[in-house]
View 1: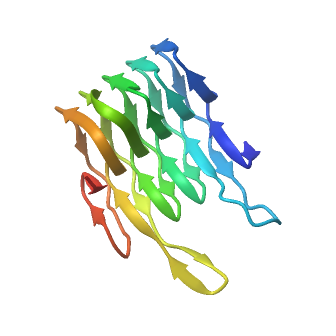
View 2: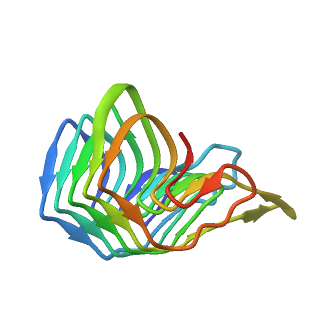
Length: 171
């Protein structure tokens, strides 16, 4: 898959929908583009999800993009949640990069991840124009806001230049 934004191995954009027992083994690549735009929302199963629910789903493919990159999803927003889901591919990006989800951006506290895991490596940095740029990287999530995460784990290696951690780069 090669698009500018909202790319997933199974779903590009998921809005207020429940998805169960689904998997994807697709490799997902977003960009690069010849024009200056922020490219992102790339995930092994879904690119961007708002108000969605995922149960017992998995992603096995490798994912690459610029921003909002995750082994399972690029972005979770508006109380999107996942139960018993996993990501097992290598994830590479520039900012907001996580082994499971690139960013969780909720407006109120919501149960976001329960019994989920990521086993892939989170590889940074991407070199742009000879300059190394990278940040907000985590084994499970790159960035989290108002997220409630319970009984989850990450197993792969994480590399980054700032806000890098085994579970979440920025909380």
